[in-house]
Amino acid sequence: MANLTKSQLEKLKQKLLDRQRVLVGEVREKREQAATEGNEDAMGGVGDAGDESVLRMNTDLEIQEAGRDMEELNAIDAALRRMEDGSYGDCEACGQDIGFPRLEAQPTATRCIQDQEKFEKTFATRSTPTL
Ligand SMILES: [Zn+2]
Picture 1: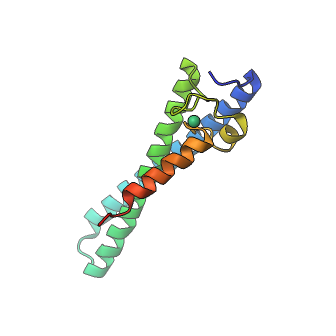
Picture 2: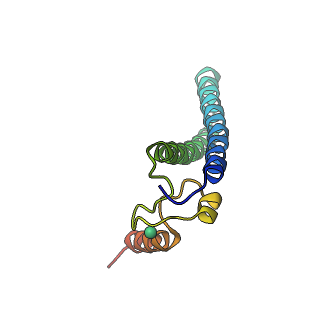
Picture 3: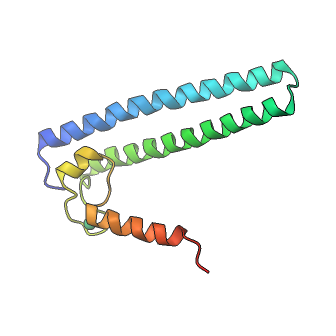
């Protein structure tokens, strides 16, 4: 466990739980929206092709957003689990303390700032097509 005081840990846990509540609400709303749109689509019959493609684009965007929300929810779950098992706040790459200021800014962080930068560089390099 990183060198966090009880009150720091409580504060971070509260942040995670608050964010979790917001995200769960958003995901639920999007699901309901998608369900309503689906029904309208089924009942409304055939619109013209233009309408349909706009609707499809919106739905794709919503699915993408919902996917990001789900990813963040998973990250929050994982952070709460790490709080339970005592590994919260430790960098998963080097094992050093991530540090409270960084965790306060990003309570789901799993790496210290140096390792996060390394990771992002590696990731960026990997996603660039090499010829
Ligand atoms: Zn590290």
